Image: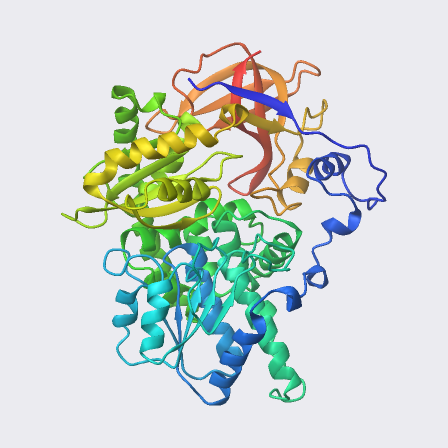
Length: 572
């Protein structure tokens, strides 16, 4: 059983003029997340960072403004994940709002075209578009951009991934993570970069007098899509991203989300009126991602683009069924990966690489994520890129502190002929590899990880916001916390720790992987129910326990009660 250490976040003693209505616990939570003024929890759209500092916008706007004026054909080329799908929907909807009349989209097939704007994808376009705009990809598409320009297509790259040593020769590149780019929010998701490009394009068209008086398009109508893609891509929720996400959530809760998002929320069994970032990340986003993993993300984009509620519900149900298939497939692959760990020397590796010829390439990222959580090590999981293929697709997941994309770059520098194309972020990356080079890669990856790893990064630490006082585990505070975020990566949901008497523990669900608890606070004798998912089977059943938990609202048959969602328990 992997040992986890509980540590409390530091809460600085700052004098802040908080609003009188702000709950004292929430003040403590905000301080522990680096909020240094009441203004930093203001999520009004006026707090959004202006687009002017984002490099490449002028050149990109030049291309798109001309394309709109001349009625040119624009094709949006996206990625096959939720960020890519929402980014394509934002691009298509936004450009139409701004006057474009010939806008379409294309999604690479994971198995036929590979990742991003590849030469294969460019070759599949048929009728030549005048302009190609990438969303959530393209910064590594050197060959694909060259192939497009050879066909006389102008290319605008919008991306947020880290660039490699060579940039594509596009007509314009918009990416906050380019070296020297002055934009202060480096955490924009791909959909966020596209939204900023549309803001700049609207400003240009407005200056040129292209809109009738009072007819300035309201791009805020796209924020439901921006919020979903930002949360699902697990980018850090800095203040700028929190502004984007919170305003998108407000639109959805008010019933003003697009038909596709409303249908996906309903299909996931979540409440539109109380939707949270967590709901989008764990219930809505996976339904879109499943299409890109197992089928064709075109289904997901169509769901986000339709304004027909009945069609949206039909597509949402189809996406839900694909997601159910994905979950079943994932469970089998994770079980096999865990057996692989038990019977090999994998646990002795610092950088772990796993491969099975029967695995599905669309699900290996989820396998890597689950094993990373179990082992608390960087993990790369591989599968054949297609049935019978001798090329592998790999997905890497990392732990806090260790930059996995940079590690892959060092593997490539040490062994230049070992890997195929790769790219990604600090916490997640992807690559391709010849099947007969897997063993060599596994050794090279472990070597690099061992050399770059700091010992403290290998310690599994769960950071908490300290204890809740006697009587504070109540419905009022649970409701306040639910809507106080948005919570997510780098701005985590409040997590508290307390000691409890465990009066009852019983299995929940058919597999026994989950459990219900009935707990008593020894300070005042108050009782509260709790649940824990994916409980470690080695965890002992003890009468007194220390728990790290989230205080949540349990809505059952229209009745709301407070409940603890246990994240970690240990004997007290």
